Amino acid sequence: MSDSVFSKDILQGKVAFVTGGGTGITGGVARAMAEHGARIAITSRKEENLAAMKKLIEDGGGECFAVAADVRDFEAVQNAISKTVEHFGKIDIVVNGAAGNFLCAAEQLSPNGFGTVIDIDTKGTFNVCRAAFEELKKSKGQILNISATLHYLATPMQIHVSAAKAGVDAITRNLSVEWGRHGIRVNGIAPGPIEDTEGMKRLLPEPLKEKITKKIPVGRFGRIKDIENAALFLTSDAANYVNGVTLVVDGGQWLLGTSLG
Ligand code: HXC
Image (cartoon, rainbow, N blue to C red; front, side):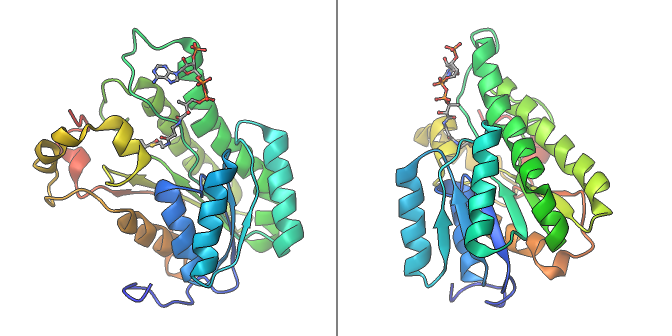
């Protein structure tokens, strides 16, 4: 926190509901939002991830409410939103970070494997936005969708995730237009390769890391903190007129080709 470039109260008084908030990039975003004044609700399928993040946030002096839900299950999402409102009284910010991923060649991927990632990433994002709409309308709140750059060109072994994240970007644009008139801003972040994340562990064997580093214009992998900073900017008043944007945070990597291999 001490090294944050942002004032520590930029999200003071806000309540953020963060899916996939137990771990990885969105766990970092949840923690960073707490360190900048927001009260945080985190949701994930796994109770143990939620408990660990709740403790981390509380140890840092923040407030955290943890509620387990699978974003594929609309009723479970509605329940998580209701419980959060019961607990904190409102929701100002929704962060959609829950995502599924594995490497698989298109000809080996089962329809259910394809559909599972679409269900988690795309339908899950819609489910959460839809369930939070009335609360966000009341608070003139905002949505932040975590996407990717995989689909800007083409990424082998990632047809399912590419299709899913393209859908997430469409949700960001459509809702920014449909819900902007309710005072709800909807934006996204497209992270590039971010080190120390579950996604990278699954997608990129450690020995390839050095080779890939050379393909990143700024000469390094992203850090979770890079995404935290983008999220703090987009959800703060500094971005009051930013709506419908998916901010690429990748050191310029996708411009040289999205394939990490
Ligand atoms: C091929 C697979 C597979 C694999 C699952 N499936 N894993 N197919 N290769 N490695 C198939 C199964 O065979 C099955 O299809 C279907 O997917 C559903 O599998 P389940 O295990 O029943 O599903 P479930 O437990 O609900 O979820 C599985 C999962 C999830 C989607 C793999 O556990 C998961 O993704 N966890 C990872 C979370 C994660 O890493 N999140 C960070 C994402 S990073 P069949 O036909 O057999 O029934 C990210 C960033 C991208 O998104 C950008 C990076 C640059």
